[in-house]
Amino acid sequence: MSRILNWSVVASTAVVALFTAAYLRDMARAYGRVRGRSTVVPSSCGDIEYTEGGSGPPVLVIHGSGGGYDQGELLVRALLGDRFRWITPSRFGYLRSAFREGATFDDQAHAYARLLDHLGVDEVAVVALSHGGPSALLFAALHPERVSSLTLISCGVASSDTPDQAQAGRRGDLLMTVFKHDALYWGLTKLFKRRLKELMGADGAVIAGLTREQRALVDQVIDHMNPVSPRAAGAAFDNTAALPNERIAAVRAPTLVFHARDDTLQLFHNAEFAASTIPDAKLVSFERGGHLLISVEQATIRRAMQRHILDHAGKQSPQGSWSARFPTAAVGCSVPVALRKTHAIRSKERTSEGARRERLRTD
Image (cartoon, rainbow, N blue to C red):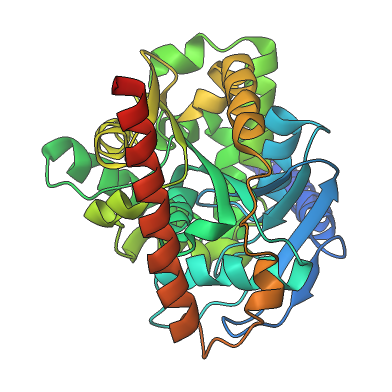
C-alpha cells in the first residue's frame, strides 16, 4: 500500500510540474505576443494603445470584452484582409490603454476621436464586435462627421430586464471572475474549453457543428485572450457601464447589423433594438451561430461588411479636414463647445438631406 501511495505522490507531483511548466511557457508567449508591437499615445482621455496597418479606406476596428488591439487584429485578418487601412485600439482598461474610475462609454467614444486626431484621419468606417458596440454607437452619435459607416457584429446595445437577460448577465459575471486570474483562465482553456465556449454565448449544438476551420478561429479568439489579467479592468468596465439604449437614435451613419438569434451572451433583442431605432439600419440575422457568429458565418459577414464599407467610404466633409478645423482642444474626455455645435449642425444637415432624398424617391 505504501508503495502505491508513493507512486501516486510521484505521479501527482510530475503532473503538477508538467502543468506548471506548460502554464509558465504559455504565459511567457502570451505576454510576449502583446508587448512591443503596439503604440501608446497620451490624450485628454488617458493613454490610448493601438496598432495600424494596411492601405485603402480607413477602418476603426473595436474589439469585444476580453480583447484588446490583438483581438482587433484578429478581426482584421478574419473579415477585412488587405483592402483597407485598419486602426485597432485597445479600449479603456485593456492591455496598455488607461482606465479611469467613473469613465463611461461616452468617454471611450471621445477617445476614438482623440486617436483619429493624432493619426490625422478625418473619417473612418467603424466595425465593432460584441461589447465594442456601445462605444462604437456613441462614437457614431457624438462624432457623426467622423463615421462613414457602422457595422455591428453580435453587439450589446440596449439593457433589458427579461429572465434571459438576467441569465446572460450571470454568464458575464462569471466570465469577469475568470478574467481576473491568468492561471484560472488558462486552466479553463486547457481543461474545460467546451464549457468556456458555452459561457461565451454558444450552445452545444453550435459548438458540435463547428467545422475544423471554424473551430480553429474560435480557439484563436479564446487563446488570444491570454493573458487576461491586463484586460481585467476593461472587462469589469464593460460589465458595469451603462448601455446607450435610446441614444442610438442619433446615429446617422449607414448601419449594418449582424446577429444570431441563438446568441446567449448578447441576446438578439440588441440587434432588433438597433435595427428599429437607428434610421435606415439593416439587420442581417442568422438562426444559429450564437456568440461565435464571426466563426460560423465568417464568409457571409466578410463579403457583406466589405461591400457596406466600400459603398460608403470617402464621404469627407465639404468643409475640409476635421483635425485642421478642430485641433485637439478638449478638456478631459469632453467635447469642446465648438465641436458640439458642429455635431448638431452637421447631424441636422444629414437628416435634412436624407429627407430630401426620400422625397425625391417618392415623387
